[in-house]
Structures are given as C-alpha cells and as structure tokens.
Image (cartoon, rainbow, N blue to C red; front, side, top):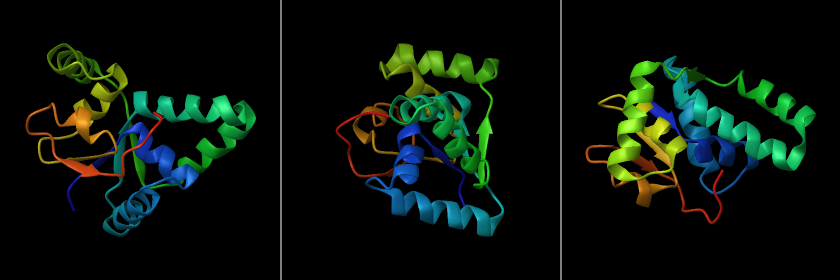
Amino acid sequence: MKVHVLDANALYRFLTGGPGAGTVSRLFKEARDAEQPLRMSVINWGEVYYTIAKGEGFADTARIMDRVKLLPLAVLAADEAVLAHAAQLKAAHGLPYADCFAAATVAKDGLLVTSDVKDFKRIPGLHLVPLPEHKTRA
C-alpha cells in the first residue's frame, strides 16, 4: 500500500460525513489492515481542529479530536526540512500556506488525499487521490 497523506479537508469530510468521506473511510480501513497508518501534517491537523471549534466549541472539539487519535493516522511534526519544503512550495506555486504542508508531507512515491485538485495540480510530480470538489475550505 502506498503512503497516503490527508490534507485538512479530507479528515474534516471524514469526521463530518461530507463528500468523499467514504473514500477516506476506505483508506483508513486499508491502513488499519496493512498496519501502515495514513499521515497528516500537524499543521493540517490544526486546521481541522480550528474548523470544528468554530462551529462546535472547544469542549466538543477536544472530544472529537480525541477520537481521531484512535484512527490509524500518524500526525507528523513540521521539522526544519518540512518547513523549508513548504516555504519553497508557497514561493514557487502560490498555494495557501497550510496546503503547502500537506504537499511537503507527501513522500516521493506517496499520494495526497484532497479535494483541492486544482490547486495541488500546480505542483509537478505530486500524485493525488481526488475527493469531490468543495465550496468552502476547512
């Protein structure tokens, strides 16, 4: 199984049952079965947290994100190499800064799970698992 990286919208849709939630659910099941967790940048995890907190409040958000800890999901720190790569992507391709962390987290042979296909297609060589387009961002 190739390594899959979730952007913020992919996890948010899974948690809220939005368009593409079934695809993300299937990927979580495959990750569990293969004992190879999906990955996500801590920056994108934070995006999910604040998006939920805006609508649900902090107490409910903490409970929801505690359940996320039970998923086969590795939340990866943004070390200096990832920070530099994200900054380079921002400078070269003009993506929203947090999205650059999702792209910077993808390994050379990995796949990014996203609904922002139009934005991420600007990055040459980045392989995508597309979710349905969205009208509002996470």
